[in-house]
Image 1 (cartoon, helix red, strand yellow):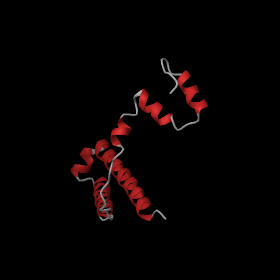
Image 2 (cartoon, rainbow, N blue to C red):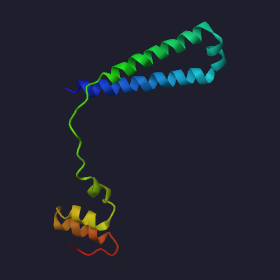
Image 3 (cartoon, rainbow, N blue to C red):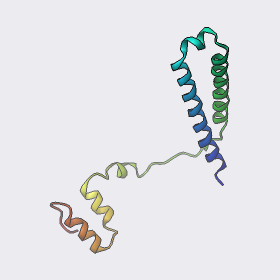
Length: 110
């Protein structure tokens, strides 16, 4: 059951959609909206109210107080070097490792 995660995802999607519609209306017809055209002004105000409501729903989502630990971050950032890839692939069967080393110029079998 992914109720909080699914709710947050769909709420964010709705917020992006509402902001996009509001941006398109304000971009296409700015003079009509700000001059007091009743239809476009009403639509813009309703969109602003909906965006405010969606923002309040997102704001009220529970937060996980546990600290995130990224102990593998330096190792992950170093995945571009050849030695790191060989170290990662050392757990693979020998035939696969030798096949991969044949395709890397200047690589010796480890």
